[in-house]
Image 1 (cartoon, helix red, strand yellow):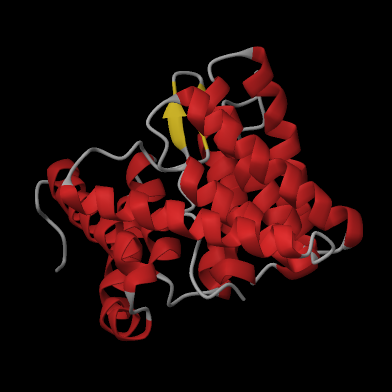
Image 2 (image 1 turned 45 degrees about the horizontal axis):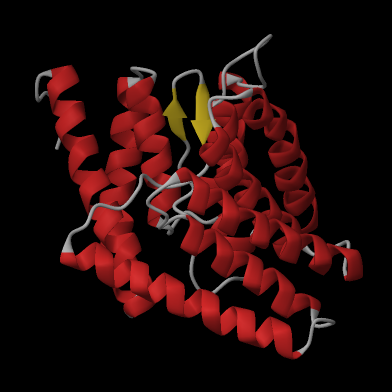
Amino acid sequence: MSPKPKTSGRFLALGLFFALALPLFGQSETNKIFIARAEREFLTALRQFESNTNDYAAAWRFGRASFDWADCATNDARRAEIARIGIAACRQSLAGQPKSAPGHYYLAMNFGQLAQAEAPSLAAYRLVKEIEREFKAAADLDEKFDFAGPPRCLGLLYRDAPGWPVSIGSRHKARDWLDRAAALAPGFPENQLNLAETHLQWHQRAEAEKALNQLDAIWPAARTNLVGAVWEKSWQEWGGRRAAARTEFSRIYQGKSSR
């Protein structure tokens, strides 16, 4: 299992399209620290990969670092450039180890970065099936990787992609995969947050409240277990999303939560 998630696992709507990455960073001092850290990790992974290009694990780790740095890009051209580097690295990893769950997983993630950079466009739409295929391959090989990352990302892909006939979006598939991720890694905040946000989006009060309460229940242990600099960005995002979800729940249901 990856020592830390290399994605929030969220999909963000871009008009009729969706994106596989976090929003662009602002220029706060905190975010500048995260950007600098991602760049350092990218350069370190690049050196490790270049020192032994036949090390297929180093290749997918470089793909992972590429995703993280692309996620910090402040313009689409730069995002696409870095994503293509990550795609090439993951493809090289899979050429040597075709049954590598991380290789398929981070190939999908970098495809997502490229899709975000190119959206809205036909090229971006064509990447949807590529993303779906690679996440499914990762799920078949190791669905628990990255705290149930493959099911989590598939769920968000089906939730946020346009539906038929435009694309592959499906509420039924989204619910199945998001529930699967939460069942596989119930103590991981991202999985419970995704459920809460999804049920709020779908105006499913009971399910949203259940997910929010479950998130509250796991929060202290997660805070204890997921520590260190590598988790700082995740906790900043999760804290904001948790507060926003609670606020949205109160707004929709007039504060009539059982809590």
